[in-house]
Length: 579
Image 1 (cartoon, rainbow, N blue to C red):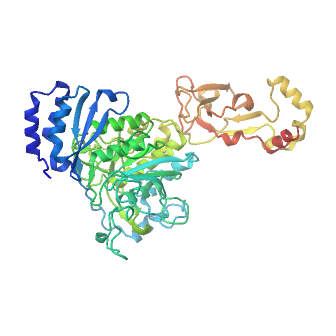
Image 2: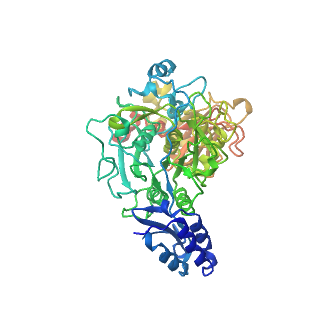
Image 3: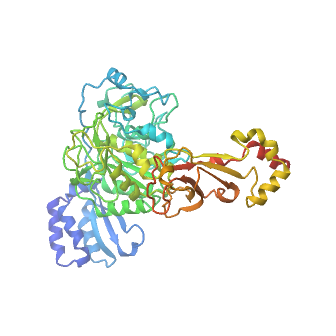
């Protein structure tokens, strides 16, 4: 079967150029630039066709043709008035695995460097430098996780290759977009990447495990006395296999994976799924962002998905790499564990943030541990932190996260610039997206120091009195909100209780914010049944200018009112049940 090379494609383009409508000439120019051999997969070429009739949704159609039918297909497309543009598939070669900038890393050096409390009981936790303070360089992940509300399960998609069965990284679902395509996506299943000789331990004899290693960084189950602790503590992992057993990937497969994980039609023989919250794509290659891939990313972001990508390991200009140079992605560079830009990491104006990408503990074959290097392993650190944020602030947008990253990082020791907001600081990032560092002190009238007077407070005469003078309240509905330990008292700002739509940043200037009540003192008493009972809203306390936002800070003058604090005291539930 004849496979068209770039010269044949260019000749075809030249013959067609004079007869092609202006709207499709961009596609013909693309044809000149594509190496046909690189676009051939299983003796087929995928042409991405942009159609006017698909406007309003994903406007590109996947068209697979035999390699010897490309010329005829292009002629037909050039005569189709519905066709706006077309582009050819691109192939990305397996990313290079860099060598650590600190080759002397050892188990003893990890143990000596770790002054970290045993926050998790996972046996490999002490080796995980992403959680440690290394000479003053820390991403403050654990501190941030303590303030995040991780009760809501977050769905994270991993587009990669080399997924392995694991007792620590649990996959909820998956699909293979790379050949062999189908529902099987783990190595050793459905003809995917045979597991190698029985008993083999030499990595050269084993299939690649890149996807499994990347996924373990953010999704290994923490605190289960096994393996390691992933950055995101409550995740549902969706695997999308987009590269072959050599680690090479076609961009149309990656594009299909993005669409599928965004809950859209992927153009493949698999039904759409519930959208994920975050996609991690630890893959990169030299090139210009394909328009069809950019459209897929834009559609995913519009669906509420944040796309995190690796900047690449060429030690050069990240602007020359895809998908990092695409718009609407969070592009992550790598630093050493001591705060330098890693020598292998790309950098440039398209990079948004950096994270530790050297000596990162991962799980590989048979849940054995290894230390991995590369922007591939910095990206899931950032994806994990964003997942924790999305668990707390469900409706935060990718644009808001990108803006927050730009102003919340710490500078690298020596980077020469080109790493966006700097090294990620999870605490500062949560400040920027509206996750309060502290919770407000809230007590019902029958709680705390008043508990000894419960009988009197629950008396019918007291209840009648309170209802008359508190607009219908009683001891089981009145709550006291304290601002005694909040900054802002000296500025003369009132103590304010406010609410926002559930899942929005807890800030009084948020577009959904409403001021519930205010007091000039340090305490505020209000009827929780009347003012704090809407489960579709989150509540907070502010000691700052709630109109302009002046002096409002998640660190000092804002507090959250947790819904658990509004649960009725036991005595109130008992009385209610007796009525």
